Amino acid sequence: MGIDYTFKDVVNSFNTVREDIIDFTSRVFTILLGPLLIYGIYFERNLFSIMTIVNTLVIISLLLLILQKLKLGINVKKVLLLFILLYCNLFSIYNLGFFGGSQYFMILIFGLTTFYFRKWFALCINISVVVYFFIFMQLYTGEQIDYSSPPAVMVTSKVIWLADFLLSLIIITIGGYAIYKTFKSYSQIVREHVDSLKKFNYTLDNLPIPVAALKENKQIPYFNEMFYKYFGYESEEIPSFNHWLKCAYPDQKHRTKVGESTEEIMKKAFKLQKQLPIEYHDFKTKNGEIKSAEVHHTFLGDTAICAFVDLTERKQKRRLIIETMMQAEEKENQRIAQELHDGVGPLLSTAKIYAHSMMVDCNCSDKTLYGNKLKELLDSSIKELRNTINNVSPQILQQYGLVSAIDSFVKHIEAVTSIKFKFAAKPLNINSPLIELTIYRAILELINNSVKYGKPSQININLDNINDTLCVKYKDNGCGFDFEKKKRTGFGLSNIINRIETVGGEFDLISSLGEGVDVNICFDL
Image 1 (cartoon, rainbow, N blue to C red):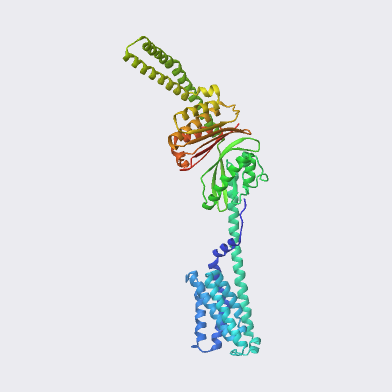
Image 2 (image 1 turned 180 degrees about the horizontal axis):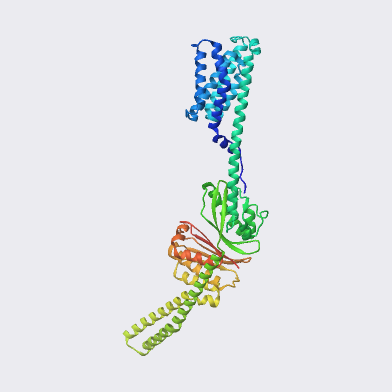
């Protein structure tokens, strides 16, 4: 996993040595520029002239900058240097024009203001200096003002040539030192980055869990040895997240669904630089194993370090536990149903016979009335008992199959409500009684919820085999509800989802207030 080093790193390296460079500049100015200023004082020979006073102030400023015992802040140092450079530049242009080395001071002013002052202040200072230079050049060339000394004399003056040499030496020395210190600091930062990266990669390489790096552009620049052992893919086979999806989810429909949901989550995660774990279920490894994993993320700018925690064994155990509980529950329901049928049923039937005999053999009008009431009550009891037996253990499901069981329940509900049902089912090829029972329980719970809460006028139920997938579609036109809120608080709804997902199905519900309920349930047969 690599790191990009850009111009920003060089700028940061310069910032670490800014004060060191400005201290060096002060010493160079004092050593090389100081003699020129002293010569100016000597040449003027008037201790009370403006030039002598300012030159003296400049020399004092330089001495202040190089005194090690005097701890001046970098802001004070840069202001003093700017004052010295501006004075030297303006003075040389005013007195000597082009021959005074003003161009050298302009270069130094540009460098100082660019790297040590705010950009708008630097821009204003540099524009002002350039405008000042061109104004005086125009005045000199237009012969509106005269040089303090004739140009011919200045060209042949050894002092002028010496000054130019010293100023060139100042620029070269300061520039070279600044470049040297900056890139030395940069090299140190790079070494620290590399050492840190080596330690980081060593840690990732030796983690006992699969780890991969995912870039914001979906590239996978790195994964460790455990990732290779877990998935079985080489880096050339899965250079990006989309390549991994294609390998892990061969089914295009499933792959599209997982890819779209993950892309939306990760886009937000990179923006916020945090994300809760994401679960990937039933993906394929290179050797054909079906696994599930939970992915935890650590964000480093445009890179997410993804750690995979295997859920395969945990999910299998959870599924086995729930299947065992469901089978035990069904077995217990069958036992209770058998006891009700074989124990309570005959007693109630016998009571009905006695009531019938009493009604036939006795002419007493009161006893006839009581007998009729008793017969009506017993008929209702037997009917209610049969309903209870069917709810506890759906014998019709065992005897006639899923379609007939649902159709019977729909007709029973339709007879006592004003809801219109539209139930359609094509021939189904279900080899798992557990899936049949799960679908039956889910549809009964959905119908009960619609009748109890939704108040729909129509319910549509459709069962169909599409290729090797069993699809169940349920839709009502009731008042609907907040699905996310209900999923957290409604036991019946969470129980449906848990049952379906445990036996390998997918549950998708769309609903909102006033929009009814639309449910899709799919099983891979």
